[in-house]
Length: 264
Image 1 (tube, rainbow, N blue to C red):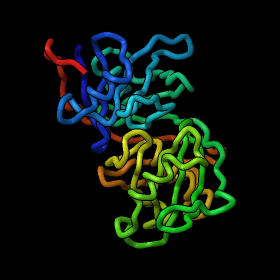
Image 2: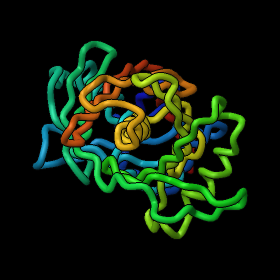
Image 3: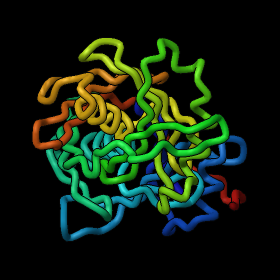
């Protein structure tokens, strides 16, 4: 089995370049940072009739993600540089088709239209007390907690993320973000990713945070917004029709050829 590894602002993925079809135990073992190559997810190229390229996006717990902004940017980088795919093409995630544009290590994605962007009618009861969220979909589910607090890490966002991911209100589980506006065009967020937990950055989460900022009046549509996360900053433009464009870098790490004795 041969795998290529890269990261988007510290959110790292493995691409299956050569090897058998993946299954849940193998994915979990590959993502293990102590006994495997380690990653926040795996990208498995798949055949498709709907786009130029296809991919199955695996979370590190063996579940399947509908979309990943960082994962798709990494795949686009690899397709352009290592598979001579050109600098403009489409990718079928199995749930929808995303268009990509590659400019060296900087990747632009058309992430599709935001859905269901409405504040929850009632606060959700958590261990720390009731919490108001805004639920939406960027192809995959998100729950954004908006705050005016000046220090995000002073809040128990990891506990909130752990509880909300598995809350009955989200039957397919959800990604969770805690966010605030530093300036009208500069947002800050923390990310709890479904199936992965705390991550340094997330492309679809950045899109969700930007969309909620526009919906709640903290930012404007059709203006590039900087979304700052612990791993770095992504650029998101939320158009007036709620379609979203994501832009950010990819950094290659290297290739892994697994030893013949390795086993999940």
